[in-house]
Picture 1: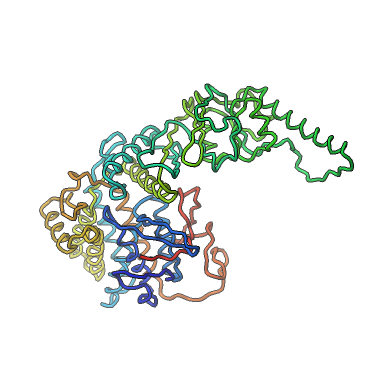
Picture 2: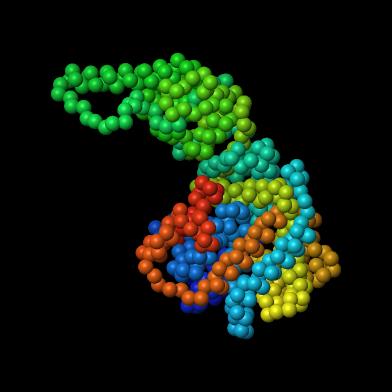
Length: 559
């Protein structure tokens, strides 16, 4: 694997370079220190010297430059899980590493890889049953959702900030009935975390959407009351011909005539918009500079290059119908809102649309002292949103702090003696491997992992199945501590880990080959973003999967 380690308590990646299972264990070793509320940060440095400090496993994994083919397969599979679930990247990586490590030991004892894979699959079935038995149902109005959200952000900020962001997140989700497209997130540097707020309305990011806002200038106090809104899904320019051509000018009079023609075309376009009573014109693509200036003079607020998700949200919220040309605008196509105003945020500006007659919309306006802090805050809140939505979807919640994995370990270990073939050894190995989560939580909290695991097992044996590792490293009831997670997260982490480990274990040999048609892999062994993922299914794009980078950046890790 090509990422480097200067100092680490784990085996170096170079020592495992020739081990086909080594990359999985090396990835787990890299991410282990970030797990839990006491997890430490990684400083990720790209080849240009840019630095990102984060303890978000998905961000670190995106930055790893991995040469080993098995390592890339594992990374792609974990990233696919992260895109689907939104949380649990580090947990999945640790489970993959432990399952592969346990498989290595089983292979040395003579167990065939297919027996190991079958045993892991059987153990996974028992694990799902154990998590279902442990889960507690919640509904969208249950106050336990705030505990779920708070658990997701605990350790990232101080306790008061964690509670505040959890409240903002849950309240915003409830306001839009947990419908993700009706909630957008904006992060801006130049402010404190306490300046973050929830906005009942749509925010249009002008830094990414429009080069100027001539209709408002820089006056934040100015607002439009009850404006009509028009949407043009394309460019706004006086030239509508599709054919290209040139104009030859031989005299000043001819130049003046050309300019007069252009001015007349612009004036005609502006009059068409103004005559229809439009107050705000949002264009999905660019607006001609001359047209934009004239629109502002005519009292129309022009907004160009509106981001696609914001453009569609405006259409739904204002009851406007997007058209491809101004000529298609009519009264039925126009929408309206109660108020449109400009807001200065950090070094940029946004347009706020509030009082929406159509579909309700919420925006989270996040602040951070630096661009890095603002973006990291956005990533954390996205995780928070994901887990809250999973909890409210009907699957229920389980105690956190490794309580769920301890219950899984006990359930699988109890059923292993009833298996009458050699795959029983794989069940026992699975039961031991999943305890990596409570052991790592205890280690990162400064507690002895063996003592914590013994205490956990004793408490669970006595029927205290909600016992887990608290932030202090002590073993206590996680529900009483407010440490709760959706059952979907540990369940899907286990499923992804078992599937990924099985995929790796079934590989008998790595062969050099010419480019394989239809796989999306080029001659250098790199995979295109729109081709198959490691598990053989079509890879999601960013729009489909909710973010993430398929290939990762060529970053080196120093920790």
